[in-house]
Image (cartoon, rainbow, N blue to C red; front, side, top):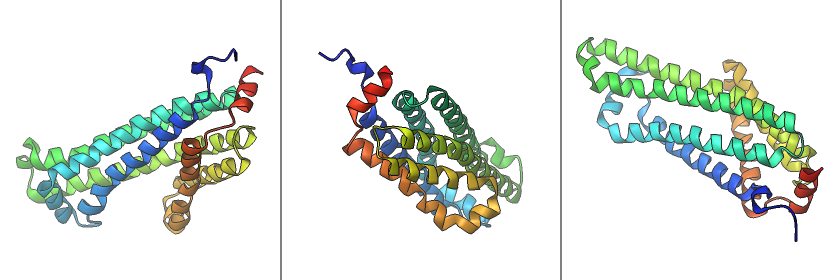
Amino acid sequence: MDSMTTENRPPARIAGLFYLSNFLAGGIAVGPSTRLFVAGNAAATAANIIAHPSLYWTGFAGFILMAATYIAVTALFYQLFRPVNKNLSVMAAFFSIIGCAIVAISAAFYAAPSLMLTGQFANAFSTVQVQAQSYMFLRLFTECFNMSFVFFGFYMSIVGWLAYKSTFLPPILGILVMIAGIEGLTFLSPPFVAMLKPWILAGSIGEVTLTLWLIFRGVNTDRWIEMARS
């Protein structure tokens, strides 16, 4: 009988399922923003938030779920890629945890406009002031959330390299994930992001491909065990 216990098997499919749940949480989070936020119009945005509180707070829940599910992905990927290079796996996990923390902090900025527009602050300032302040918090939320992509970019670049160097995943998956990570680093420069936006969206192909591969194909267990033992 193989001396490797069930707990020491590669957590490939469970990692893929958590990654998929992260994508679903992202859809829940982004959906309200596309419907409620009106670029450059604080009054219209405020009116939408007041008129659709349930939808707005659904978006908030989505951002929290994004952070929570990605923490799970980080822990599982650390276990999965530790046999390849433990030090790089630890470094990648640190980058990811910082990114998740930034997402959680940005969710607080996301919550602020609804609290200002419907809470006790609504009567403390003029309507125009409350609308402007609420819109400012949404802008802070956007900038803070975008900042997380830089840390996730470092994370995905390292994970992609680990996947490429591993013998239990196809090298092409690692290359695609590294491309996604490099494109995440473009968020260091907002003007650069605006210029490359279509290509940045295409970078998610690497993450989606890795997710589906882990769910439906998994990894070469024998090779993973061999690396883990060595």
